[in-house]
Length: 463
Image 1 (tube, rainbow, N blue to C red):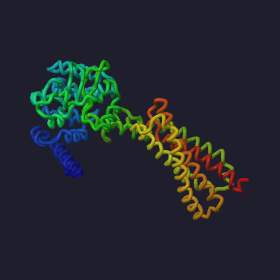
Image 2: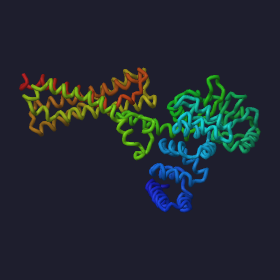
Image 3: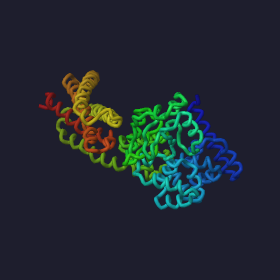
Image 4: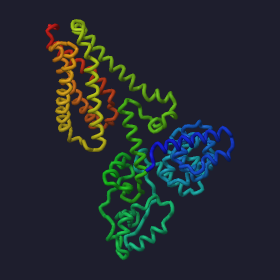
């Protein structure tokens, strides 16, 4: 097993040797420093360099590794290379990549005008046409992710003949884990290489293949593709045109990238950060500060304005706070507990929606479940709060107010924290946009109303 510390140390040593070679301005030394290293490690080092140094490293790489590095780089660094390297070389490197990877690099890191310039430089214009077709599909769709290089077989072949066909297959075929049985352009069956190995050599593929095919359309969202691949443990997913003809396949390595991007995007949204394309998967130090500020300021301004509701509540209950100053001691405890409870609930519900564990018809069950959870949490935390208030010599009345407020706030936070994502999903709004900070702000204001209203009813000093 390779330890993560070893990988990090190797990358660090590579970065040090590359920087030393760049300082010496000796291309031979730089080439030697780069020799034998994995493209992913080289890409990570290049992302830490200035653009000028990164392109020097890029030019020192052999074509095969340079192509793979281009596929591994973050959007900002890849865009710089695509804009500043000789178009003929970039075109040649992209042509070495699988078509779906080449399309991905162009889609993320080049303007439509630059894409056409680079594609026009390809030696194999048939490959360029395939990439253009992939780029024509909607962003984040199965069509954009798929490759047309898959293993086609015909149903009349025997197992032995199928093996011969696999051995003679085009070197650009993306994967041999799944083999596709076709009648013309229509997919009629799928079998794995394992199925082929275990079958008798004289059997026909029609007797071995699976006819119960799970597939997606070219316009299916990539999240849905990822969910299906995860659900059925596929290594590849067939993609069909609207007329049912075979378009290509999406392989699991591309889905891993999709899952990483989607999870990062949801995490940013739940934290109240705008999930801009240039921020989502970019390394921390590669994102310009102005973009960081831009991605955060919108939600912060909204939450800042919303948070003024808390001040309005405090002003409304100013007399009560003046008469019983000890009430203010528990405000941070109460609004913090409510905000944390709501944030936990939002995260749980959003996860359930994303994994399709919660459907629209489950709204009632979810609300009842979260209501009960909120009551139980409120009772447990309320007992702790009662004991804490008594230790502060707050008296039985005020301690009871704090305990009852915790119970009410936890119940309310759990309920509203589940209701809002469910409502957003019903309205076809991304539930992740209903961020934890927004729920926290909402619960802050309403929690104070609950607390001070209970105090007004129960404390004799306020009558």
